Image (cartoon, rainbow, N blue to C red):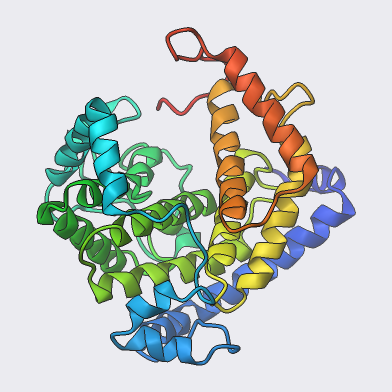
Length: 375
C-alpha cells in the first residue's frame, strides 16, 4: 500500500477509531517489550493472579486446597446445573442413542482421530500443536505478533491448526469421563491439557495468534472444567493449569478485543469469553472489571449484530448461529447465578432464535446462505 493510499485510509477513520488504534499500537509495543519477563513471572510458583480482597485464595491455589478453592462461591460461580451421578444415569437411560454417539466421538479422540472443515486425519501422540494437522509441517513459532497468519507461505490452512488448538474436542473426553467414570477418558483429558499448556506458552505460537481463537478455547476450557469436576477424581495439577489458563486468556482478551478489526462474530466471541471468565471466576484479579466491560459491549452490540427481524447482519446462516450461541451462553451463565440480562438483549436474542427456527428445515438442517467455515 502506497503512502497516498495509507493517508486516504486514515482520513476515512473516525476520531474514536484513530485514538483506539493508536493506544492499541502503544500497548502492543509494550507487550512485545515485556513478553520475556512476563513469561518468567507467570512460570514462578508464587505468581499471584487472585483478588487482593481474598489473600487466602493464593494459598489455596498453591497447596492441596485447590479443590476447596473451586468450591468456594466467593471464587467461582456456577457454570450450569451441578452434575450428579443421577444426572448421568438419566442421560444414559433417557437418550441411549446420543449416549452412544457421545462415546463414539470420545473414542475417536482417544486415538487422536479428527474430522472437520472438510478434512479427516489422525495425529501422532503427543499431538504436534504447532503443526498443520494434515501435512504435519510446523507453523512459524515465536511471539504471536510476529506470526503472519495471512501469508500463503504457511504450511496449510490456519483454520485447521486453530481448530485442534481450540480444544473443543476435549469437552467430549471430559463428558465421556463424567458419563462412564472410565479412567481412559480422564487420563486422556488430563494428558492433553498438561501437554497443551506446556507446549503453548502464553502469547507464543500459532495458538495465540488470534483473539477469537483464545476466546473460543477459553469457553471450551470452561466446559471441560464443568464435566471434569463432574467425575469421581481430579488432578490438582490439571485444575491449577485450567485456572491459570482462564486468567491468562482473560488478560489477553481484555487488551485484544476486535472492536474495529472485526466487530461482528469475532468481537462477540472474544467478548463473551472475557465475560465468562470475569463473571464465573470473581476471585481473579480484574475479574469484576472484565465482566462489567464485556457485558456492556455485548449489550451495546446485540442490536448491531441482529436485525430487528432477528437475522444476523452478516447475512450468513452459519455466523447467525455462531454469534447467537455466544449470546445464549452469556445469558445462561447470568440466569444460572440469579442475574438477568437486559431487556434489550433478551428481546433481540429472542428474535434471533425465532429467525433460526423459521430458517430450519423439517429435517433439522439449515440452508447454506452466505459465508461459512467449510475450509
